[in-house]
Length: 242
Image (cartoon, rainbow, N blue to C red; front, side):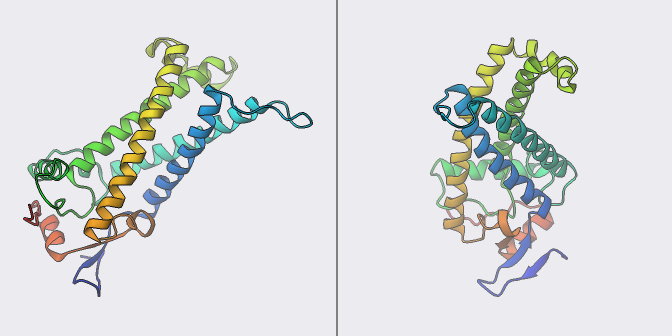
């Protein structure tokens, strides 16, 4: 196996599970999300006063930052989705959507862990089955945010702007105000999603000591040979600890 290197510690294998483009897209999305939340909250409820001797157009500057950060966010999101569709063995779409018996067993075993029916999470190389479903939900939430954002932008843009072509989205969301409402609500849903995601990653990294958190920076996790063999053989690995 060309992408697996022998680790000196704990008799584990160092497995390259996240390619550089995916990691770059992930961090761009996260950083853009922080900026979008901060500017979006200000747009919804302005909390800064214009300085007396400075630029009085604070809202304009905030909206400008929000709009063009959203463009970077959309590009990174589209790139990450493309990489998942054509990605490597640990990042491709079938690691997110449970179509095989193995993936569904992984969903069941992961669910047992979160329902306190087993002591440790099941062994996986990249995403377990429940991970995949949760990430698909995250992609759906992000898609709704993006589309409602485009609907609002199409409504306020000039008639000769290319974004005016997206005005068909406005009635799909029930008008500008409803699109704005959905956009705002899904932002709070996404904040909740991100918080849970960070808590889960830190928890798993603490329990499994396999580089779960580090992998989004380095690309590597430290996996037991049994887990790697199970993935290669198409068998759902299970450590048996309940």
